[in-house]
Length: 195
Ligand SMILES: Cc1cc2nc3c(=O)[nH]c(=O)nc-3n(C[C@H](O)[C@H](O)[C@H](O)COP(=O)(O)O)c2cc1C
Image (cartoon, rainbow, N blue to C red; front, side, top):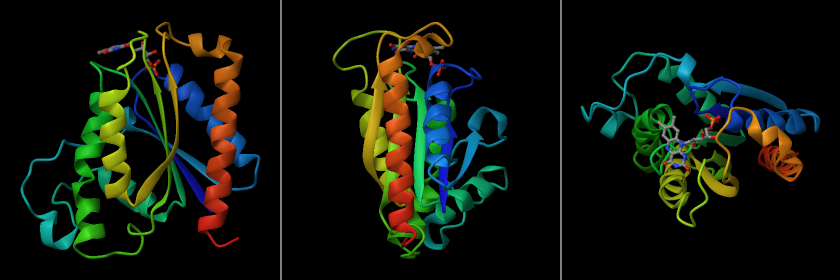
């Protein structure tokens, strides 16, 4: 039983990673395994649209995304965290999202059961400003990313008005919400694992 966390910010221990860590530790406290992957510590290219994955589900780029594909397939719940950059996810996150085209093929072409299960996916995002459309772009992107990766979006935690590194620590209700999200991910994980 694995809850996988993907951290999309290059600012280590920044606001989105703090919320992700809180969620993962709450999930771990419920007895599931948790693992965090920090995208900015991986070496991977963006999708080159070579078409290789179209029929095989196998990406031609032999880099550290290959291991992440397997973790995404093995996990029973996924929590993906990103800062808002220019009204969408970070480039690190978008690079990983575009590479999920191979997972889309595994799901829709190969019908690989690791990616067709519609497991629970959760999105955490943090932005500095407070406009009503702040999360619109990222939320739509994440909806289709989760679908391609074998998840259905089951919840999100979207936090406005946070710019300084670590500022979210002062927002007790957001930290509580992150723990609650992690607990829900753990429950989804257990249910998907058949417990
Ligand atoms: C390249 C870049 C682009 C950003 N674009 C936006 C933006 O479009 N809207 C916004 O509200 N905040 C924007 N921000 C601010 C971050 O979303 C904010 O500082 C957030 O708290 C960072 O999260 P992190 O600590 O997890 O990296 C941007 C920051 C950077 C570095």
